[in-house]
Length: 301
Image 1 (tube, rainbow, N blue to C red):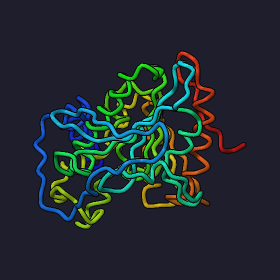
Image 2 (cartoon, rainbow, N blue to C red):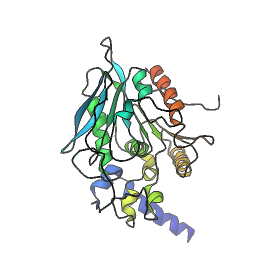
Image 3 (cartoon, helix red, strand yellow):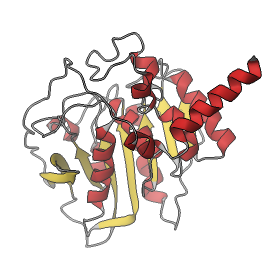
């Protein structure tokens, strides 16, 4: 019976993932249901030199984003990062404001380092068209945002990175298992397995799909597509319910030989790891100038 179960599980996995997450999604009709989600309303202006509100195209939608380009660049090509915000509802000026090191969800480390920074909102957020889908269509939006950075002349096309925290960290994981042209990906506290989040029916309190349909969760879970990771991806989290799933992803990645590494900090939490690790990532990006990324982390030293 044990071997039969293994064969059945293997068959199910191949049914869903042999063609990759985006292909599997193309064969499936996601069903959105009524939920308690609320958008934040129109995007507010950021009073910081170099930051402007722009529109980027994702499918048939024009979506809002903040774009920061350093005012003084000496016309040299600059590294760029797309930052996927945490929480739900949209983007706001706090992304470009100094925050407490105990919970710094801003992009100021990247701004202060002189990088080009894009912070997108997703379909159904702020006053954008579309509906909230919870890690489904938003993946396409994030891929489109990264594509937008490639249209900016000042951006070094070979040095476009992706980072995200919490819900943004989950989207970063999902982009990692999809085809992308990013140099490296950094996920802070993303959820590798959405089924584990919504299985009790509560989830984040705004689940927009039928949680009893396991296909809906399967196609929103990066842990089911680890073998498809091609871009160097780093996962960071303190002690949380996500840590075990991240370590499972780490084990799968090792078995598949793909470039994913999870780091769990037992003395950290979902928020206080952000400030020191973003500072470290900035240093890594500043030194990452070769033909291929040389970014790695050693937290034993």
